[in-house]
Image 1 (cartoon, rainbow, N blue to C red):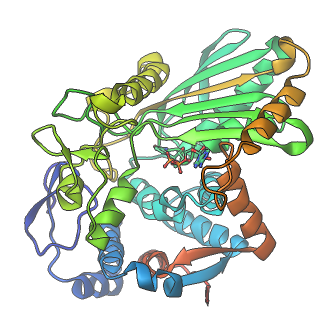
Image 2 (image 1 turned 180 degrees about the vertical axis):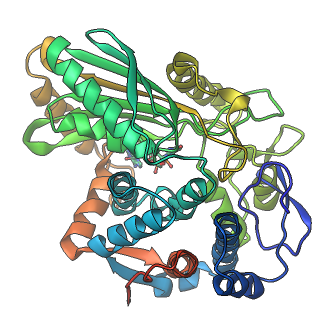
Length: 432
Ligand SMILES: NC(=O)c1ccc[n+]([C@@H]2O[C@H](COP(=O)([O-])OP(=O)(O)OC[C@H]3O[C@@H](n4cnc5c(N)ncnc54)[C@H](O)[C@@H]3O)[C@@H](O)[C@H]2O)c1
């Protein structure tokens, strides 16, 4: 029995709780009981959904027990191919077609390779939930509703966000090759993972790529007590010489929800400017912030120009939800809502631009600019000045050099529980 708009609840014992501003009645009694019960009784599709909720509880409970001191000891190594195949198997077991499962797994794997763990394997259970509740249809194929030489309006047909995103960005690149620019907007899409996956597709063609998506309302616009817009990410990727590049890929809130969750788990206060309390004032109380789910825009309060982050988030909403005629603003389903109540109907925007249509020598100037930025004298000699995308590239290089991704044990525990539930072989890992 779940109340309105189900979130991913903590393991409260059948009580009514509020999580990220969403009221949830958690039907669980104890974690152990719920896990074993469902595995034993060959659950129906809906029961499997409930069980996946239990897995999230398990994961969150596990997180509550780790401290910074034990974090390094809790890391394990998973071969990249193993991680990908595990994700594909889970998605297929939840009802996905093989091709779309691989597309979504590729984006999750890339997020983990880049070090954005919040958008990698961590998202697997919620994608499975959406499949199990028929809130997402992996069999569907995106279609072009209307187009001009340089624009297209796409119906994502409620398939995976990765499938819609890949389709739209490929179309934008094709149009940019023909006309110099391709601008594609999609409605009826789903969570597409890291925005940079799509903008970076344009790099391979020597183009500038941009990607945006709207998301569930979590951010309170400047001067508002209420949340209205999402973490609405922005990504712009631009090529430079010899494979170098600039890749900005960022949420438009001060921080992602996951960072607030981690402060709460560590029992540490939030820096001012991350989240606000119900009275609309910034709070340092991580528990309260997590419960209320009211993030501040990038920049924090008005005094430190948070209205610019608010403006950027609204800009993304205009490019996505408003342009696409999808859900937008407060109409988008709640964060962590896992399929109950129907499709997400997100709006997304993908742009490819061929810089050779402007001044010659774009790549050389980009390299020069990146060199200027990275060559600046650092305020701390141990922390050199970076260009956007450098951290992620370093993480990818490390993952490729070792062939593995280092996951926290809590992620592995969640994988194991998911594997049990979906009756797939558990993920293989090595303790470090
Ligand atoms: N699909 C969705 O609904 C959704 C919503 C929000 C965020 N996301 C994704 O989450 C991921 C994480 O977003 P985030 O905002 O937490 O990222 P972040 O804050 O870690 O990084 C944001 C950007 O800043 C750059 N950066 C970081 N440190 C830097 C430094 N010292 N100097 C120069 N540049 C630096 C990074 O390279 C990156 O381009 C992104 O991939 C984003 O697309 C997805």
